[in-house]
Length: 219
Image 1 (cartoon, one colour):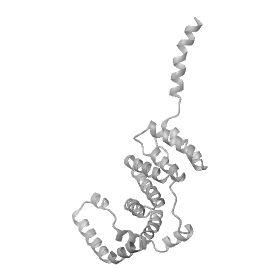
Image 2 (cartoon, one colour):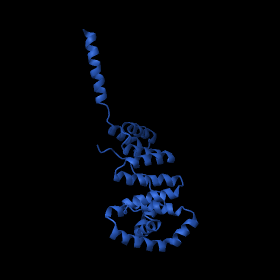
Image 3 (tube, one colour):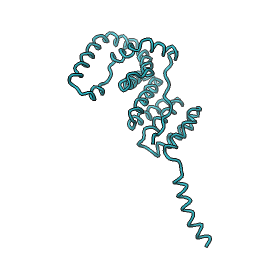
Image 4 (cartoon, one colour):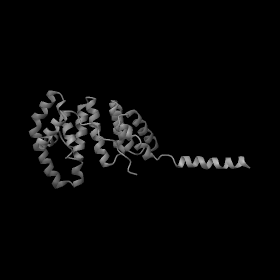
């Protein structure tokens, strides 16, 4: 009689252990404390486990990209940032493109970094960190490329202004928002920041702004 009771109870105990285990969000968020205290390898394990549990969610990929970035595994971080961008919400996409630009910058892939920062500014024109990093990335390009860009800037600006006027008349607002930022427009944005950008640069001593903190699940 006793043995039958034990056998009957065991499945219930197993079910309780499974049911009471951590949720995917808890697994993801458990990586934040080690991340913030500098144990990025331990944080990465939590984020990768969350990826396995929720492969369609962008947050674990974004977080693992940050952990890999801190471990100076920039190429791997680029892969995870790209995975997060496929799955991300608008807010996470902005942060993902920003950090993708940082990883590209560290890989000396300055053209890719510039495009990533421009994508951030397309979504959020007031993003000062993206403006700061964009200027640093533009300065890293070969001198002949910078001179060529400056020589064409005036003509490009005039073309951009004309295109903007035409878009306002002919295209709905949603299509205007999807238009990519050109090189001339990017430089115009940087110039429009003025003293604020210079103060930002002086305070950071021309250093690249670091990736944003980890992201939590909101469910």
